[in-house]
Length: 298
Image (cartoon, rainbow, N blue to C red; front, side):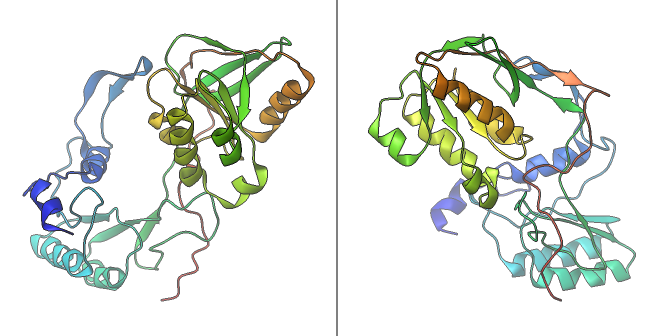
């Protein structure tokens, strides 16, 4: 990490990138009332155990979260000496730190690691050794169905965080590099339908690229087809009035068929709705979370 990056960092457990704050608040964040995302999912937000006491050991620095094995090992030693009850390490692929945690387990400390964010591709789970608990990210009983109405009266359902008024769109383009570069998509909707690419590229990698590309080109909306439509965390990248809707390939194929057969296609994207409770199948492993089996050998 450069000296310039270090100058911008906080010389305290507070972090510049927000990752540590996110993890800490997930564990023990205090209760906050009247929370929503632009009116969606309104309610009370809090961490899993608001009365828990946290000791924060900062090992990643700068906007990119740079660190070293030596820094992580030093933090583990400090935590063991301080007598913590649980060690939670929300890191990427660990190396020698995994074996250092044996000392913590010998002292009765529970050690929890993240499995990583390489999903939904299989064999991407990290940090899987017998003496630690390796956890995935999961969903909760909340979803945001978004109605897509076609000009032929078909009603389809996707998911989005689109919290603005309904929009009518009458022009469509594909999201390939050639299509976006060779045509004017300002004010138009882009349909991304690429089953072969989706099978090998995790949506967490593909969707941000597509969103940035279409936003820069002035698109009014994006319909993004994936095998797993549960990738709402990435849709927060959609800014302003641009609607980003995730659909499965069956729905995308229906839209594509309509476009092929219609001379002047029209689509209406409605504002997303909040659905909470027993109607939502949960918990499920989040799309971005790494899957097993682990291929790492100890």
